[in-house]
Length: 199
Image (cartoon, rainbow, N blue to C red):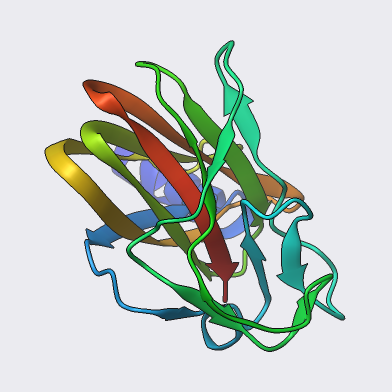
């Protein structure tokens, strides 16, 4: 009798009280310095950080936020990135090639943060960062905490370097966010941020 009641209760709970689907968040990284075509890469939205005006994909609803600086420092512009960027569908600069501009900070614990929308639709975000004579940690987390955060500690590299993170994610709820942070955690150089794209 107890077994029958337990079976009926289990059937009721699974039929009328379904377990919420989990979110999803996975990441990978490469150190390619090959040219990035933001127009091709960012079918939904893209941004290029570092020019005096924020360049982004034209004629779409903006989805990638502007950056915020983490820590009590000021970001600075640089124009010697190993990884050139190009685009043909931007605003305010409609097209560009061989753009090597980005922003940097050069203090331990400091860095950058930005966000993109998250809901039940699976999306792919590519984040272009780097640095010189430093190591960094990139963290991505869903605002509804429906999946474990993605964290990557990158070892200290002497000289300049570029990193390209690909993040695939999906939240359980609507109107959520994927929040990205990139911080300097080792070395005596600095870390950089130059762009992101969403597809």
